[in-house]
Length: 421
Image (cartoon, rainbow, N blue to C red; front, side):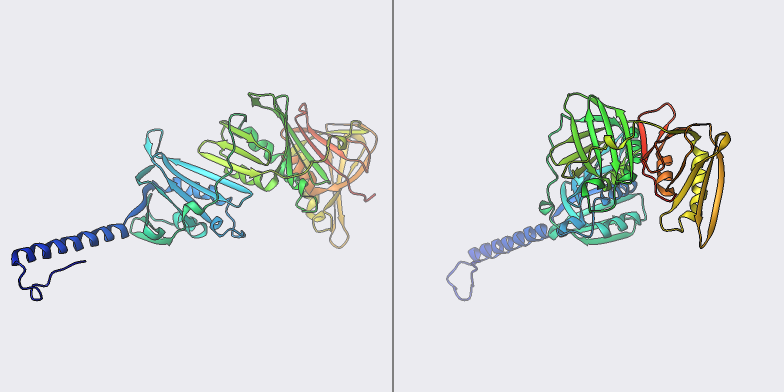
């Protein structure tokens, strides 16, 4: 910057000297002010109700993992717009986006001062928001992505990451989706997902096969030792049919997030992704590649022995028998039909002891039967079945048998027996 020196240049008029002197001072002061303002610039700032923030953080955390090759995915992306705050978590397989509106039902939830974005370490951010002392939280992002979180007298400073570097969510064209009530979707997941395989030797069996055709949704899961199936009519505005496999892990996480409500969930399917769209929530999941086996041929069409039982009584008897059976290698219990409509449930672990219990059935039709099966598989199936009474149809001691609720063909559970007799 050019300056005058009055003693070096004595011929310069003193009036001009002071003019330039003060002009330079003003220029320097103005530059410093601009620099200071730039250093203190607020990139994003909002105040939010803590309970809404905690709930959204808990939802998106279900998609965040510390085991990732992309470091930024260990964080939660936070974007503030004039409409509200959006939180995003992803592990590449699952992506969850939760939106918190500025206002809902006349109640203010968020006050936006400055729009913007940040990515914060999920592990620390989630713990901080849960333990903040007051009902409101102020989040401010300053230059260099320094983030200040304030609540009451507590103040945290976190280093953030650039949200522009966060991977973009899959782009799914909406409009060709199907709609299912949230309650029904959660029930269908609960009644099938437990039967997926936990072994990666056949990856396709770690997912639930969802088939959509003629206005009906079928969910099928099997680990090759048991099978669970549930069917239900759905609302759709097109005639397209789908046959996809959704990872069991994805459906388990979705079930935890969805509210217990009858509001519809829109399901949008593409070649390798599925989107579940609920109120203020987007849940993306990759689809499993490969062809799911044709399970219809596993379901026997004939019956040699048929039982009608009280679901609760049968479940409790199996549970008691499993107290000793679970100490054994295979958690196996035995079922035998007796005279007078009685069935006998038993288990025997030589190093511990044995248990025998008789249960009165409502009816027994067909041949005498002795069969063994996994107590765990049976209890899982019985817990999934709705209804106070069930049909159990057997086709032999070493053939798969089927459990269904009385007067309801929309639910089916199939179990393979264990050879002990």
